[in-house]
Length: 260
Image (tube, rainbow, N blue to C red; front, top):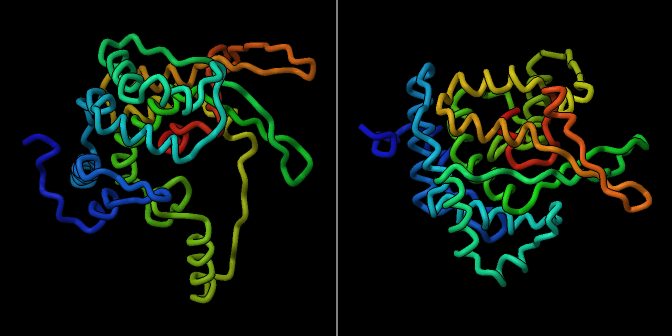
């Protein structure tokens, strides 16, 4: 039986595929149905490895919702300077159709990531990677397909990078645990986590659930993107540190949460 037609009765599965709103943006029913089905399959069969996902990424409804999510998030243009106004003037359907064709014919290649630095509370600066809108829409489409699968494997005590969960909920849970006679709290942080993630191990972890070559190749392309920086004199410089070192993932990328 195709994944899309499986029974979706579990409460957790319904929560994963439920109508999530971002401002006035709601998830289309067809996208919800796919997400529920993928989550139900992953939850019911923990050892199942998905092999037919790539064509879901360039589905018309998936790409349209990915575009709507990116537009709702706004954000700055990438290295090509293209913004949403440019796309609307060009024609959104035409633009999405060309992206779908590039994915279907496997000619899609991501552009370099524009790196900017934002100040941190401790006086240091945090690097932030800004992909082009085309790449952000493609990554978001992949996230819509992949997230329900990996969500099924996460333990209930994990709150980071999960739909419908946030840091405030984690704090409430910690408070409740403290009142249940568990007074010890461990506060830890990983140094340069985004910049040190090993690509091979990350892809191996993804392949534990997703074995389709084209999906893994997409993720690998995003991991190995070159980075463009502008110095104080306005000169642009592109580096391939991530590809050369085979480590690191751009912080701020739409694909970051499901690969964490």
